[in-house]
Image (cartoon, rainbow, N blue to C red; front, side, top):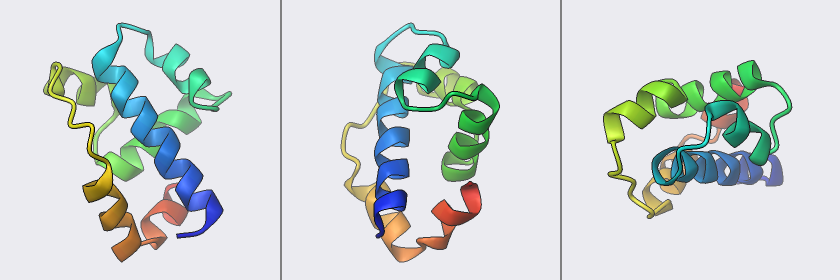
Length: 86
């Protein structure tokens, strides 16, 4: 996994964590994760997790799994998924 893919994975893992563990608006979470553009953040999150950040927050209702190993393994197996998400 290259540096860009690692950074994206780290940002999205942090975003997912904040979506569950805070009541911050999605725009604030996007900014805290390094995205100046909310649409860019939404597109990347959706490309990686298969659903938008708002929908993910509603579906998970506090059930955040802090283990990112499974997610990292999925991107290690298919690194092109991160590149396509951009």
